[in-house]
Image 1 (cartoon, one colour):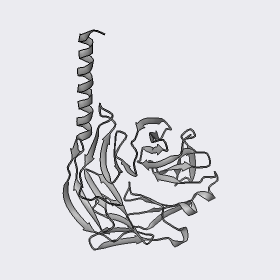
Image 2 (cartoon, rainbow, N blue to C red):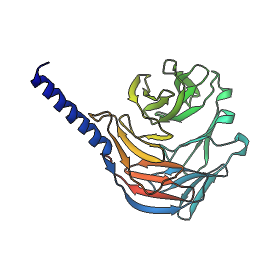
Image 3 (cartoon, rainbow, N blue to C red):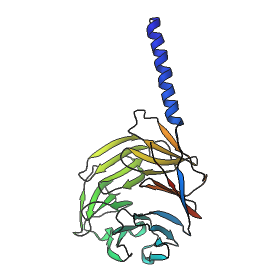
Image 4 (cartoon, one colour):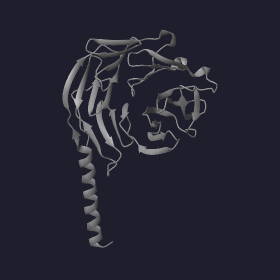
Length: 271
């Protein structure tokens, strides 16, 4: 190897290493905008109308100021999951009874679905709101993602069987996202197209923003990651004062941290 080539490779390595180090060393410093005292077992999020959603003693609550709406259904056991994508049609999932309740914005019941009573056997651990009166459904009986039309009471399979166990999932109207036990990240659209979105770092909590970005927590530190970065190793730490917290959620540049006693809202602009 010539001296010129060797010198070039050394410079290239140093430049590359510096780029990775700089990208990993970047930090996001959000501005605190509000504190809200709260009495809840689980903070679920908020909507664009200023309402906060939470669970207390297995009761689903919607709160803004002195306005409080409640829904409870003791006959269906523990409330497992709530989908707030559409505040006019919210999805409450009761896994123990394989059932879903749809609520309007006053928390009145619109409909109840028991998947065990469906013509096609469905056992549902993962569910979310999709488009055109449909719900995303993952059926453990065939390990496939499907769509359930709750007006027509019709179920259709859209994906091929998944080969790895799901450790985390999240949905939006157009996609079912999941991370498997090997930390591989995928999406499935409403037509059944599965896209591999990369590999995520180890995490104890995570929230997917879109198919390119997510926020995750590990070792009590919060990070922002964008898979569209030219350097795939670039991770930005989000500097917040809370060292222990139960949950976080991100929406419209607002990062909310739930500490069991209060919700702290930060204004955050991701890179």
